Length: 244
Length: 254
Image (tube, rainbow over all chains, first blue to last red; front, side, top):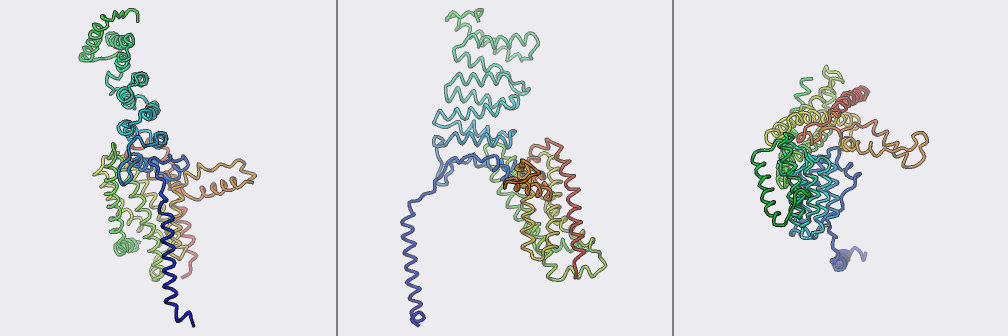
């Protein structure tokens, strides 16, 4: 009887009570924040096989879109120095396993991720470019050149640049220009290894004169100019080409 | 059979199947082109892949819904009994429905494939193979949905069974990779029994993960051996579904 008479008041005060509980709960949990990873861990092989539903190319493109847009935290963008480059490297290798032919991942690595302010992270980008290009140097010579460029310009690491340049020079791609063969000479010359620079260019000239390699007149003039101009400088340093 | 074909196609118009799927696929086109255009390089390839994958998925799920709801409604409205009262065999009835649903799906897939070839820079041979394998995939999905709808009177059961079939078939590649039975004779551990169950599943379900690869539209077909597997699978699996449907439908009493 009591319940029927006072039920509306009972439910009203129960509502107030539960509402107060909600406010107390909010006060307690308001400081909890979702732990947001700029770069989440790369997915496992099992996850990829399952999530692709048989269409690996679609999964590759979706994940590549995510990779390119890591750091977009909806309220702005994060600087590359805050990225976990170890995880980025894992992502790039994983995506290469889905599609090794696409230029997308090496482009993102060379043109975007190499622009980090943390120099030590760039070595991971170079490590990826090296691994990606090694599968087919003739097809991926451009990324080896990017490795040379990034090592020289961003890191000022001529040893790493020379490593990439030597690999670049091994390519036999028909569309690759002659400077891919000359790159070790340019880097050696920057390093001060004049013997190596002289040797590489001289080898190319000899190959052309023996008919082993077709080199255009303009390229030939450039190489002769390279040697003459460097030789004049080297003469002042008493460089002896015969001692190379 | 011609009248059944016309009936199914007009049902599609009445249920706004074509309009609904056209709108859904059109929206997916727009979203795919937008997403693809945000890529640093290979915008065309990325948009193309997004379009192909979403068109295939939307069409497969859409046609499952259409088949299951249509058949269940036909049972409830006694339309099937009315059609069977005419001089039409049960086999012709099933084949007519199968062909009708297939033509309905083709009426949507074909224009979108042509539109894709016009808008994007595609590998034409790859697109032809993608289109062919997608139509075969949809035919397999339709035949299973038809079988489920004839066997299960409840439309929800039929829809979820067909969805489950499609998803499992698409995951079959992963299951086949995961099978690792150490001793096929003495199946003792839980892991072995699970592997054995997966092996049984792989016998029953088709390998739809090999069909309709988006990479074909971009790069063409690098490995022709897949085509052989796909076509042999289709030649075996479609008659299997059809004969099961014949057998079940013949036993039904109206």
